[in-house]
Image (cartoon, rainbow, N blue to C red; front, side, top):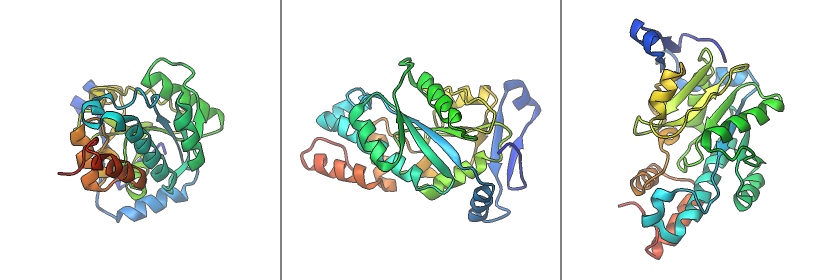
Length: 259
């Protein structure tokens, strides 16, 4: 973390300097698995921070389509996201920031640290607090990860984190729509400075964070806010908890499924 190599390049054109825009582009000079192995060999691993609203309030844009299934879907998304993250070889640990005791207990069973949302001041405040807590435990690299990535693949997350490790300070991955952000990483000694919500891709670019422009990592980009998002995630292949929840409710006509 904190440097660049021949496989990941930080591009700084004159315009990007003016706008605070930096990007990381992965080159195909060596196989991706070698990049992941190299990052793993450097040791340490990333500490991930995952925010989660109380389930009764989560995923409000799925309310009309999912009905009574909405809280269960939100929990399933988080469980599949955290399980996949914990299976990633470049992840040292996962901390979930939530005030939902039911979700917290289930996520702790998976092996995640769970902390209360002490600031209670929204998404970015929760992420800043979570990052502070993991740094107090001695974490070096910290990354904020959306909790609604039910199709997340550990191997794809490894590629993204390996690229983030080559950034000078902070790096992020845009969502599938190219508007939001699904992951923001900060190397050792660097403040996370999250700017999630809405058009966060532009916000993170303007803050000086490098954009990770890897192809082939759709599961890390595919967050779920709407029924169309969920159908897209199902087409990629979701984790077992999301699959089971969707199947159970779809049978009753209460949740969206693949068309």
